[in-house]
Amino acid sequence: MIVSVFDFDDYREFLTSWIDAQSVRGLRAQLAQTMGVSSTLVSLILKGDKHLSMEQAAEAVDYLGLQEREADYFFTLVEFGKAGSHKLRMKLKNKLRQQKNESKQLGKRLKKDLELTEEKKAIYYSSWIYTGIRNLAALEQFHDVMSLSQRLNLPSSSVHQALEFLLEAGLCKVEKGKITYGPAYTHINHDSPFVNKHHQNWRFRGIQQMDSRAEADLFYTCPMSLSAEAAEEVRNLLLKTIQEVLKTVGPSPSEEVRCLNIDWFSY
Image (cartoon, rainbow, N blue to C red; front, side, top):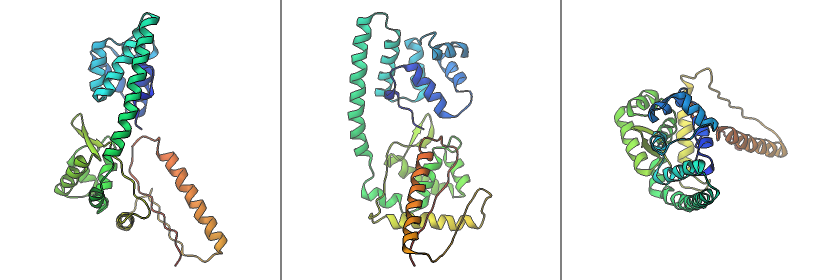
C-alpha cells in the first residue's frame, strides 16, 4: 500500500499511516534511532503530546525516502502543527494548499510521462520474467539480483538484464540501496498487439508450475456443455469475481506473489 504525504493535513497522522502500511515490526524504534531520540518520544509525538523538531523532521524524511516536493510538504506540515498563532497557521495553511495543488498537477504530468511507450511495452510483455521480477520487487525480502534470481530459479545474468530495463523504464526503482516497485504504470487493452503474448506468457508459466504444484496452488479445467443463457451468466459471474479480487488485492500489503489466469471460451 502506498501512503502519500499529500493526502494528510497532520504530519503525525501521515507518520502513523505510513508505519502501519509497511507491515514491518520495529519501524517506530528504527525511526527513533534514525532521529536520535527515544521510542518513548516518538510515541508521544505520534499521540500528539509532543512535536518533531525541524532537525528530527529532516532525518525522518530521509528515512521515509520522501522526494523533494514531498519533503517540503512534510516540513510545512511540521511547521503548521507547531504554529502558535492564528495568523501564522493561516499562512501555513495556504502554503499547504498551494503545495498540494502543485503536487496534483505534477502528478498528472508524471503519470502521462511515465506510461510505457509501445517500444517498451513490446519488451515488457515479451516474457513473464519482467512482470514477475517487478511484482517480486514489491516484497521486502526480494530487493537484489541474488534474491530474485534464487526465487525465480533464473540465471543472475538474466535477472540483471531484465532489471536494467525495468529501472530504465521506471517500472522498478532503487530506494535506500534496494530495488523496489517503481512509479511507472502499464495497462494493456484487449485490442493491444501485445495482449495475446501477455496471456500466453503467464499461462505457460502456470503449466510449468503444475509440475511442482504447491498446496496453496489451484488449477481447474472443466470443458462443458450448457445453454447460451447460462454461458452469459457464468461470464458475468467471472467478471464480478475479477472485480472483487482487485478490490481485495489493491489495498493489501505486498507479502506474496500470485498469478490469476481465467479462461472462458467457446470451442
